[in-house]
Image (cartoon, rainbow, N blue to C red; front, side):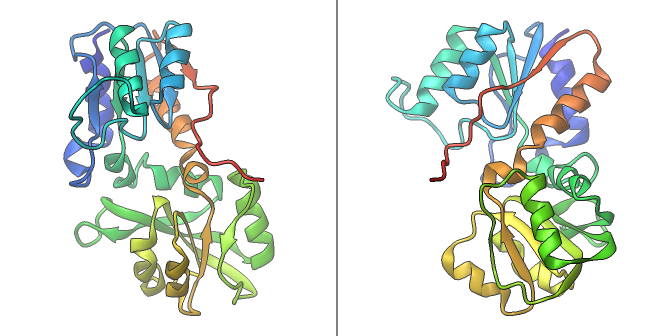
Length: 261
């Protein structure tokens, strides 16, 4: 099967025009006419992931984060991005990234996947592109039942396998309405407050951004990798249900660059 058949399917779910202006989703290395034999799924396409693909005879890597975000001025192997690209091209491995376009869809999107792990219902886009749209940033939903805040915090930590959860004061004894933004989501704090969310789950919050909770919401920073880790499962399931003639593999190598002591 040609690569273009796979990318066309993914883009029917998350069209490239839905990606943010700064993004670089799409085909990073390879050609659309390339015959694909096996696929490796990962959050990032690092040199280690390219090597794992090579060792397992996968000639396509489908990842969430584009390995190239901005233009490269040289490819000499000095930088980790350059090394990954060189390795992929030498091994004739295609890399396809599906990033903010997958963040910005409700159905089969990154945030819907996160919400499903927490059993949220009545899901809506937190900041829709247009009125009542299923396209936009973040998601908001409700728990089936009002839940004790400390219990919910523990559930979040366990569900996303967090070493630690950074959070603001647990100012509410119980919570029910939950906002989510996988990856960096500080830009949606005000939207979550306006939507009457009890909690917002995201990552990459800076010190001063925690103050933006303004005693109106509980902010939970679970870590960037942790928040988006289930995107691998999401993409694996989408492809396996659509195409049955491929050997598919979830990456065993973790690409999380952050360690805790």
